[in-house]
Length: 336
Length: 251
Image (cartoon, rainbow over all chains, first blue to last red; front, side, top):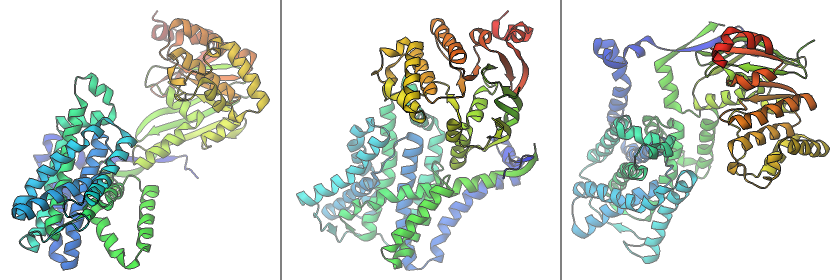
């Protein structure tokens, strides 16, 4: 029954209020308060591979790719209003461009990856431009079709190795380069996008999500901003794809697999939509989870679904937003 | 006489901010009760609380991890405390809200809108109310097949009131029925409100910031300010009050 005499009050911690603005640099405690969560994330991610064996290091690399995709998905969905289910398309284009460059010209992986990242992003953005005029569910459907479309073109025309794919690509020098390349990419992308959404361009993008007519009325071309946002998100995905192709030494149509489109959604829901760091952590939690559940065979999908349903029903705000609130605020009972 | 709908010490918090502060008010059977106040006075929150929509908003906010909404106090309707009753159940009991900004179904025709409103009514009741609505608002009669979204603001408001009437209300809650309408339409609507009250015998609770045309037709009214009821009285008393005069009539 509802207690009629008191209610729970939620207040910001005094240190949170003190750390807003310039006062943050007034004392060590305030600076520590600000730096702690960020440093914990960076140090945690960088130190993680040192404690893992070979197998889990591989899983960590895959999780990093999913983290980049989740970051891109969250950025597009929560800050631009484009629910993009075409993550696999970014991965595929990046992977194939890198693989083709490597196998035809024999360029090394470390050269191919940046070229493929940029090239894949430009190509994906060009392909997505006609769809950018759409919004909401229509955009989601179209973006979902792109990877399937690309996969079928490759198999039916039998280009780029067809169903076999292209194998024997150059791999990265050693396992530590592999791991730290992707981890650094995740960290840099995370902080860069965090910064970006707080700049002017982020303001406009959030405006487009909120009310695109009002943004148009302010004399801003929303399509050009959507293209820019799309380019940024596809950069992340293409990098992931190019990286994967050199990690496995192989590209094939499985780069267009639906997993790349779907897992980011799950990771975002779990980590907390719109928090950017949340989806990244969600991806780092979900990928190993689905690996660990591999022993259950088909049943792991069921367990996986239960976890997701549990999150949507009981913690729809997501883990990171919940912990963020606990970190910044406290609660007390107050007499009415 | 006991009021049919009575709020006792009602309080609503949006997180730490207080939106409704200890408001007590009563709505007598067959009367028009008015609630007046400027923006941010708490009129809409009060209507949401009485109609129960606030419970829905509360749940959604909770799911998002947003503001926590606390509702305290008593809302007594026909002798029962219904403050934690679901909005749909309240509608079944006869408390029908005609929401602010109309909220008609844009993609359904006028007739369909009315039929959705009349789902709780029996066939006879629906037919009778339909006739009544079309005599009260002849403008709607020619627009039966028009989609709701293509109606003008005034027609939409007429439709919204009609839709609420189709649900056979015992207490009709009108949230800012004159929002953004021309003086001519205002007159049509105030006449209709009086007619609904007088001829259909429906108790009406109306919230409005545009007091000039509503104040004369109410039987009893409350003035809200910053979430608290600062003034109450019958129509004449309120109109004679110097504060009300300066705030709402500019005299």
